[in-house]
Amino acid sequence: MTQPVSAISRQTPQQQARTAILNQLQECLAPGQLLWTEEETKPYECDGLSAFRQLPMAVALPNTLEQVQAVLRVCYAHNVPVVARGAGTGLSGGAMPHAEGVVLSLAKFNQILEINAAARTATVQPGVRNLAISQACAHLGLYYAPDPSSQIACTIGGNVAENSGGVHCLKYGLTVHNVLRVRGFTMQGEPVEFGSLALDAPGLDLLALMHGSEGMLAVITEVTVKLIPKPELAQVILASFDDLEKAAEAVAAVIAAGIIPAGLEMMDNASIRAVEPFVQAGYNTTAAAILLCESDGTPEEVADEIARMSAVLNQCGATELRVSQTEEERLKFWSGRKNAFPAAGKISPDYYCMDGTIPRKEIGKVLRAINDMEKQYGLRCANVFHAGDGNLHPLILFDANIPAEWERAEKFGADILELCVEVGGTVTGEHGVGIEKINQMCVQFAPAEREAFFAVKRAFDDKGLLNPGKAIPTLHRCAEYGKMHVQRGELKHPELPRF
Picture 1: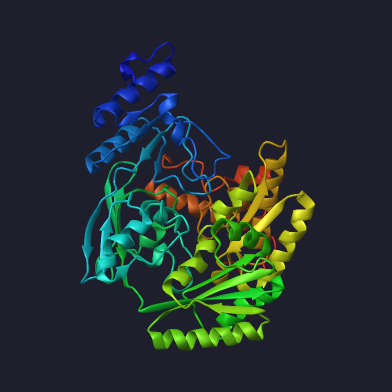
Picture 2: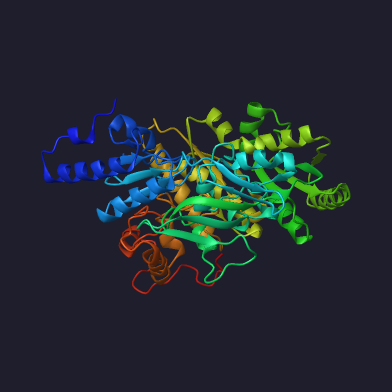
């Protein structure tokens, strides 16, 4: 049983200050809603990027808006950092605690507040799981489109913080395209609202700013999302290729033909061989790569689009095309893609999932470069990604028990991200920056751009207490990393367009 905060030793002024803060926090919360011992806070020391860990000073588990507001006001008054946390499924260290700070867990905010079938909206608390929204409105023939692979566990608050995507984001958009309104609190505990239930909101359009803000601007307590009708029919083409570059060219060719599939995903041979024994999705394990190309809509629309995509894929050298004939078979084809990450855990003790985005025309070039990096670092890499929008997810396989393997994996990942920038892409697509990619932000953005980012943060969080040390690198950090011409603010390859 947790001891009373007042019983903590007060041998030093620092301990006395800590105890005073914990006592004030405890007054804001009910019994059992404040954790501070090592045993209690250990489960919160990291998110899905478990290579980086840090115990927080305390973890707050509020279940009312008043409690959230009170915790923030106490922390603001005492200059205590706050890291908001959802399900902890993030992959960039965005929810890693601050040693002198409080983790503000929103896991108890897990209620669906309203489903409005007429307006096709759902208003939910941030701790509601992504998949739970679609399950709750399925009887109405509606669903929530963004579908990250972790949708069975990830929460909508975290989805907003990272601007999550999913296999159907090519046609239906990322989280930012499917959210109408966000409510929450600033670090000072002031209530804020972004967006509107109407077609437009008065004043500055700050709703998009909240998406991908990684908990650095406000604490989200309510989200209203768009719901869309479930398509009458969905079919997926499973296309096999004997050459990686042919598959990459096929991705660009499908889009160039004026077709926007509901989903367009790619997996290389390493990921195919990892997945097939794991879920038995029916993949050709001898293929160099496969594409999953989905069409949805009315039966007539789907038949036309499947025929057009099949023609393009054949022209690009597909060795085999299989079209799902039943909903069960469609889900089976997708099961391999959805389970690619856990399948990697069956063939390697550890894996490091990267997240960069590149122009579609550069997919073949970047995959060749990753293959060369495998030889350079002596590590395997399985590639599975959202090919339609160029969002890569290389899975670097390593064994943390072997000395220096993690360091090689980390450098391997850094090289991939910096290559993404070099070819005109970006260091992240949907996983966020967190602490994982903060050095690569030095490569992508010049000092003036980073200062603009800090100016936005100061406008919301004047003391810099919300999730400090994440996402935006300082000029000093970039100088130490040595990847930016900091004297003149020059960016490598300024002639290349950036996303």
